[in-house]
Image (cartoon, rainbow, N blue to C red; front, side, top):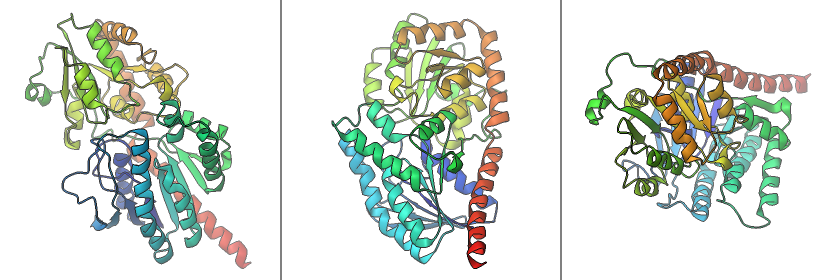
Length: 420
C-alpha cells in the first residue's frame, strides 16, 4: 500500500499531534508492508518557535528509516493571537500544496491520510486524492473549529455558519473520517457525518515505555525535590485550552501546606503568563519540556496528576496527555464534566472530577488525595489496568491498520466490478 501522510505536525515534536503522527509512521515502517511518504512542516510545537536545527524557510527532503519526509516552510508567530494562528495555518496549507499535488500526480498513492488540525489542508487533500484516484481519509485529533469558537479565538459575527458549512462539506466527501474519542465522534455525527464512513482511532500509549516505577526516580534528586513532599504534577502543553490558571489558583489555596509542591513541566503559548501569575508562590515550580527518554521519569514524579482544561474545550478536545497518566499509573484529578469522555474515564478508574475553572474545588480534591495514600494507590492500580486493556500501542495501531487495508481492498473490488 502506498500511503501519503499529510499534516502540519510531525516528529521530532515531543507532544501533541506531531508525536502521535510520528509514532504511527514508525509503527507502519516496522510492518515492512507499506511505501510511506509524509508531507509536513518544520517542528515548532509546543514552544511556538521552529527548532534551531531546522531552517524553517526552505523546502527540504529527508529519508529516515525508509520513509521520505517532505518539509515545507511555514510562518510561526511568537505570540499566537487568533489572526496569527490562522495565518500560521494558511502558510502551511499554501506552501505544502505544490508538494501535495506533485506527489498525487507523480507517485500515485493508494490513500491520502490528512490530519486535522489543520483543517485548511483538507480540501487540497481531497482534490489530490481525486487526481491520484486514491482513497481519502480525514483524521480529527480535535475539533479545531468548535474549540476556536468556544474559546473565543474566532468570534467574528456571521462567521460561524460559513465555517461550519465548510466543515460539513468535508465530512460529506472524504471516503473515511476518524477521530480519537467517542465524544468527538458523536459531535461529528451531529454535524452530518455518515456513520458508515466513521472510524474510531484513539490515541495510544506504549505501555512498555511508560509504566509505574518501582525504584527511586532520578529526577527527584536532579531537580532537588524534597522526597517527603507530595508532588502535584502537570506535564504537557501550556496553551490556552488547558486553563492552567485553575492550577495556580489551587496552589494559592494550598500554599500554607508545606507538604504539597506543584510541579509544572512543559512549554506553550501561555507559559510565560502562567509563570508570572505564580511568581509569588513558593509551592509552585516550573520545568522545561523534557526529552522523550525522560518522559517516564517525569510522569512518575506525580503523586497526584492534574488534567485541567477549560469548560469551553470540554467537548471539542480529548487531551492526549491522559494516556500517559493512565499508563504510569497516575492518581488523576481532572477539571471536566462527568458527561465528557475525559470525565467518564477518570470516574471509571476512581479518579476525581472538579468543575472547570473552580480553583477552590480543585484544591479541595488535591487535599483529599494528598491525605489518603491508600485511595491514591487504588486509583493508580486501576489507571494502569485501563491503559493496558484499552490503550496499548500495538493493539490500537494494528486495529487501525486493518481498517486502512480494508479501504484499499474496497478500491480493488470496485475496479474488478468495473472490468466485469
